[in-house]
Image 1 (tube, helix red, strand yellow):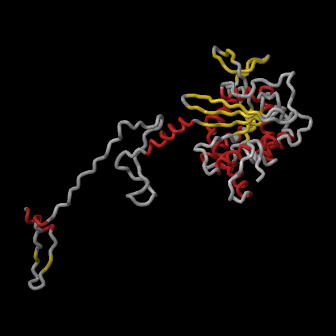
Image 2 (tube, one colour):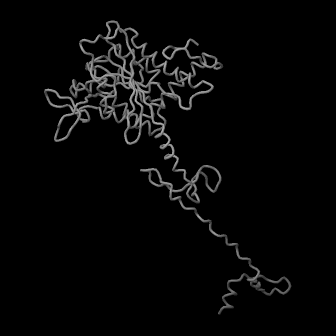
Image 3 (cartoon, helix red, strand yellow):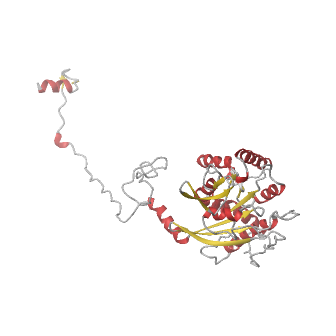
Length: 387
């Protein structure tokens, strides 16, 4: 039975001399060389002392190339490398050095600028926590006053500098009243540039540049004043401007909605871009997130550093004859949206836009005017260079 089966399976060929079918001989199994068996590589285990970053799920081990060639696909790594610890390394380094954030507040007296800043950071960080008293004189010109505090939360330290502008918009003649503010912003760029071009410069240059300017709009319910338009038109070229409607509890919900729409329309007609600017959106995800923010701006806010008992809970609020306006209640005002946007989601981006866009524009212009050849001399930190 076995021979018959072999005859059926083996191919036949005919001898040219005899015309008799001849069966090919079976191969000699002793001549076949078995393939070389290579031992599997030992995959190194992840070191026990390496702790993955908190809150980040473990990702599959992948490389950047396919079969070691190109960069089109991902390939499985042979073992743990430790790339995922870079985030933790950066976190530790920044935790040691800390952060800087410089916030400027601009607006007429009595709009609650200092109170709002105190509410944002839940501490007394502003220059003053109340408006001008009757005995105090209103400054004859716009002054620039700043105060710095180191605040800490969860082991993270941040040096917060609040720059106030008392006297802005309080004069009979407010012509060019934005010039001292513009000059101050450019002086901070100049100070940073002087440190940067020094041959022996500091390892970490002190950053006094204004990262964000909160511009307070009076809740008139009608339209922007000419002063508001002129200020934002001139300053939007040098700093991140975030417009907010102050003391929004003086407006009804309908008035607030109409006023916000009117303000957005006026800013668009005047060609004024506020932060986050459309041209700085990095990708579609950024654009989608920022479009939602732009549609909600300007935020109508209420500030208060006083607590009241509401439904057996202590809340920040303003007491009125009609009840208590809860600062952090989204049904009462948009303070929580402003706080989340300014501190929790876009604080680092505000700093990056300041450095990569506005400071770079100033730096390029200064170095171009100076020929880019000579180091910039320092005369007085409060005066602009004559070069």
